Image 1 (cartoon, helix red, strand yellow):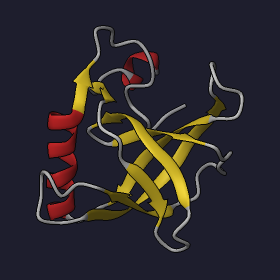
Image 2 (cartoon, rainbow, N blue to C red):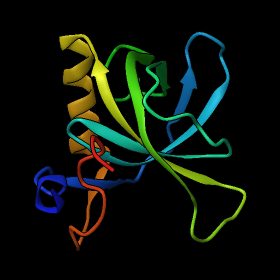
Image 3 (cartoon, rainbow, N blue to C red):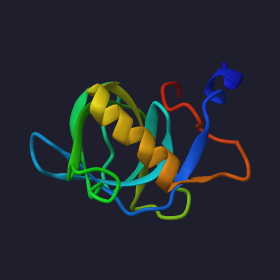
Image 4 (spheres, rainbow, N blue to C red):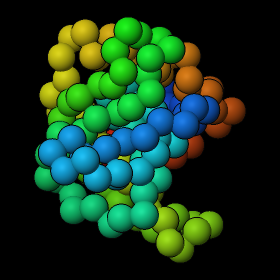
Amino acid sequence: MESERRKLSRRNFSYYMRVVDESTGKLIGHLSDISTNGFKVDSTQLLPLNVDIRLRIDQIGEISDKVCLIFKARPVWCRQDQFDPNMYNVGFKIVAISPGDHDIFMKMFNIYGARNSSQNGDSNYTQR
């Protein structure tokens, strides 16, 4: 199980991007880590697990003519940030995304994702 979680490459996210609940317009948090099938968000909220949320990621105009991505994702783990007790780290798995938006997401991974020097951690956000 442990080795399964580390099969996918994971990268810290080096660009400030907001993650918003598309149905309410409420800010969920900001991307802090990205993999090919999920991502981690730094959030001020404790989110319920295993509930699909329709999300929007803003500010992608530099890599696409679109101003945002809209897709469904599922929080699969949530824990208090180890440095800031007022923040939570939330791991999301993408559950539904259009092929075009997936291509843009992969560009985000390749362009803004900073390669980790260590592959320790939650490389696959699908299990926790």
